[in-house]
Length: 240
Image (cartoon, rainbow, N blue to C red; front, side, top):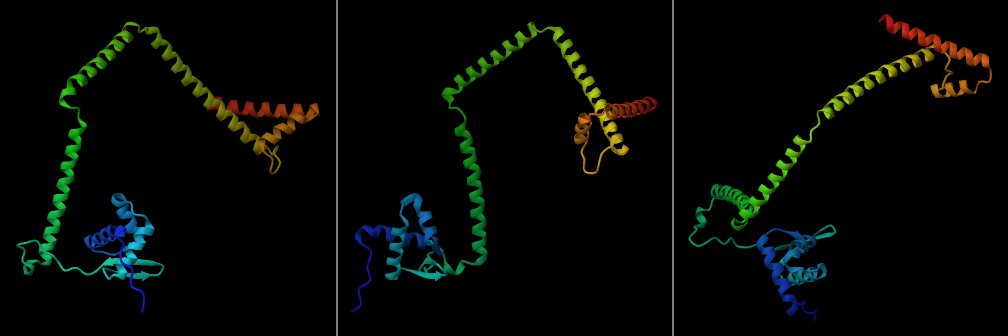
């Protein structure tokens, strides 16, 4: 005689009942991980406990299961549609269901709006604390006014003069720096066009080589050429 199917033990009865009720309420299939995750907040069932209860429910024919690859899907058995009292099943049409769903959506939206207003109201200070909040704001306002008065009394007009001078100096320095940068770039461009740079040699390497030249003649020649090109640039700028 084959062994009898193992029914839920007394301590497992609540687990089986909870899972069966959950599947019937949701009325759609779930994998075990989804069931464990969805019930975790209220029941804290571990995965082995849930798996044992699911196997028992399947063995007892209270739910159905179907494997999909390596995953087993669990679902309640088909349920008869239970309508509220006074509702005629013959009058339940697709259009009516669509209308009720739209009404439900609007009610949910209104509920969300009311909850936002409620939270906004609760975030405001209570009536008995309004005077304290008002006193704190007035004290802060007095502190700000005192700081403004102190700044007005101790304001030195020479400070503004120094600030303006610094701004003008900064402006002139930027202008001079831009002019010098343009002069250097023009000089480097002329040196590159003169053919002094060897193929693959950078300007820094050229300057290092020049500094290492032991011959006074070549060093002097380099200086004269540089002065000549600088003079050309300055002459060109003055002409412009």
